[in-house]
Image (tube, rainbow, N blue to C red):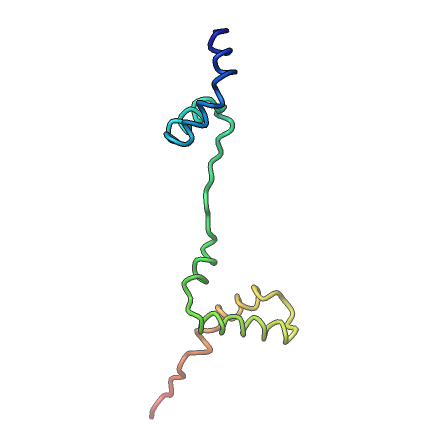
Length: 104
C-alpha cells in the first residue's frame, strides 16, 4: 500500500491530467467511486402550475392579465389581487349569463 501511495504522489497528477484529456469518462467514474455518498444531491426542477399556465399564454392574454392587475392596484380595492380574482372567478358566470326573457 505504501508503494501505491508513493507512486500516486509522484505520478497521480500526471495520470489525472492525461485521463481528463483522453478519457474523461474514466476520470468521472473514478471521482464517482471515491466521493462519499452524502455528497450526492438530488436536483429536481418543480415548476408551479400557475407559472406553466402563464408560459402557455400568448402575448395578448398576458398583456390583458397585466392590465387587469394594474387596474385592481390602481383602484385601491380592499383585498389582495388574489382575493379580487377569486371574487371575479366566482361571479363571472353570472355576469356573462344571458338573461332569459319570458315571451307571452
